[in-house]
Length: 335
Image (cartoon, rainbow, N blue to C red; front, top):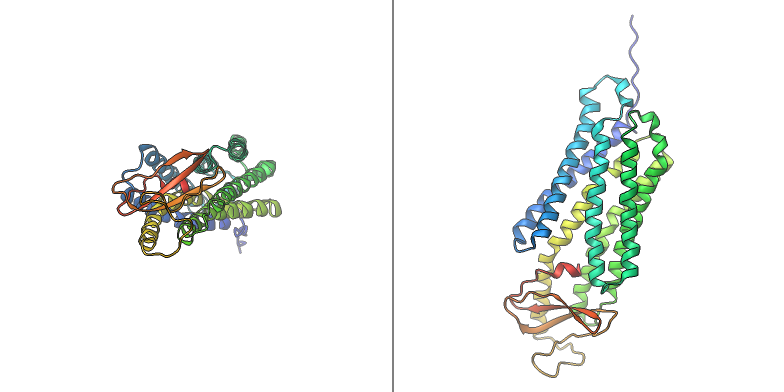
């Protein structure tokens, strides 16, 4: 009577990758929806923004294809081939490079936001930018080293690099979110209408780095506690998708913000809430001129076809939000 072959348990190896691929696939579906929404609602955006969104969507899609190829190869193509479970398939290594570029594009976008909202605060921008570039550089180093590894038995030699990548990713995301929230918090004027808009922007900024930093931290913890498993890949795989979705959510949030601004304008016409009311009809109702604040003005004048921009004034920047049939193409600077 022949012996029944004994196969290794795959729960914390291929099973972990499988769960990560499923989560990434769900998030890819969300990014498809958000990309469609972006190109439908913001056709007047600059070509640079459209190229950025298109590039991210393409990279995200290729990344999902690579990860699907990984799990299909191990569990379908090489089914019952237990020796192949120790082989590092090429697509598993290639996805690291895609993750690096997706991360640096999204994080650079938010660093640019910090530059705008901080009035060109060079020290703050440099600190955050160094974290982003550090993560990108270490990820490229990890990728170049992984190219030479064809067996998972050698994976522990990349442990320190993997820990560094996840630690820098979490640090970068937390720093970006914290700086944006701090800048927006200091921009509050004391008026409930304008402050409600600022609070919404703060929530968007919090969402920018919360999920990505949590995912990176979980990946860091699991690779440190369980270095001989692939549990960390469960959290690493969806990370790229979260980056893309955070950027798309920020861009698409401008539509909701327009509605809030329009509502605030309508309420302000009959509101009794005042603080140092304007001396004439055209003077802005809210105007906090400080080099340390981002003033958000809700003007009771209807400016048809007006495109709000950041204008330098007293070493600061004002985001002028007008009521009526305004076009807020540049409000993404404040998100």
